[in-house]
Image (cartoon, rainbow, N blue to C red):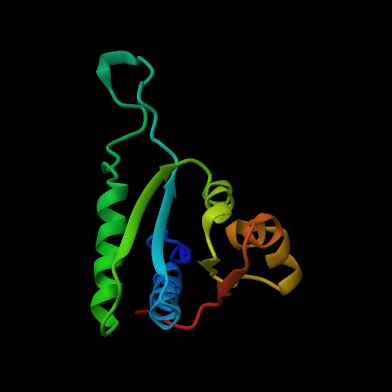
Length: 148
């Protein structure tokens, strides 16, 4: 028998950390594995040529998605007694599409939401709404409740 997987979307926000904490606590109760997924859009690899070699995108800090995810996971695991291990997965692409695809092998998908706007507006926009519509497993949406 396979160990059930609880999949959780992490984007570095306080809301996603709350979702990660909920997923870790739930996994401990169910005897499940946790997979934390961070999806991002890759920065352009080629910069258009401009006069005097100036970067038209400015001095943007380099993003390190794997490090961001690892730091979030470590911070949340440290706050949960006897937290199980968390598999960390960084993917390139649209967060909703990546989570929906990954939901094919999960027993549960957990996402946080910033909770902006009315329920009607929430259900028509955002990663959580897309996951609710298209995921192939049950979805838990963690509302904003504070910061870890």
